[in-house]
Each structure stands twice: as C-alpha cells, then as structure tokens.
Amino acid sequence: MGKTAKFVLLFLAFDAVVIGGYFGFRALKGRGGSILDAYDWVTIDAAYVPKNDVESFLKTDAENIGAFPFHIKNYGSDEKVLRRFKGRQYANATGNLLKMLNKGMTDWMIVAIRYEDENQREVNRTVLYLLVQNQWKVGDAGTIIQ
Image (cartoon, helix red, strand yellow):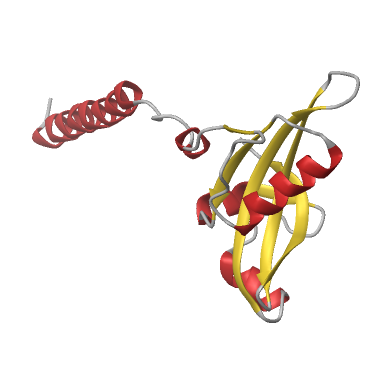
C-alpha cells in the first residue's frame, strides 16, 4: 500500500472518530427540554393577585362570568415563543414585524389559557396581546407549535 493510500485511510478513520464523537456527544447531551417548559401554569382564582394588566383583565373577565378557576402560562415578550406562535393573522412572527404591522405598538405578550367549558372539556387557547397606545388589545389567537 502506498503512502497516499495510507494517508487517505488515516484521514477517513480520523474523520469517522470525530463525527462519531460529535453525534455521540449530542445524543448524551439531549435536547434539554422545550423552551415552553421553562414557564409554569398558574391557577387564577378569586384570591390570585395579578402581576400585570393582562392578568388583571383575565381575572376580572372570569370573575364577571363565573369562570374560576382557570390556568394561564404567561410567556411575556419571549421572542422564541413568538416564533412558535401560529395564529390567524401572525405565524412565525418577530417583535419587529409586530411593530411594523401595528402602528403605535410598544409591547406585546403571549398568554396560554386553559379552562374547562360547561361540558367539562378542557379548552386551551393561546392569545397574543398587543399594547397599542397604552391599551392592551387582543392581537391574535392561535396555538404554540411544540
């Protein structure tokens, strides 16, 4: 076997070890869970103290219709969650895109809401709220793709 053939075989063996090590490391490391797992479900009932205007609105609305308790996951203004949000008006959006499409928007927030309807079925909704001219409004409703 010539010098060139030995060099090529040695090079291929080294590449196989490096590539195998890379994929082995990724397999051992794992994915580490979803970014959505970093947020906890919070139960909203009559005793809950809202942390912001959107939570206050949700609590007041549920109080008016007698829909306690219900659960929320407040994702806030997390860009990674926004990129996974799929609604009727926005899909895979960014904060800058929301600002371009909504004149006067200064902030946004994504909140997942879970409750049981009158037939005891669990209903999940994800709502994108926009702060436009110092008032929170519903910008879109949809789901978050895992």
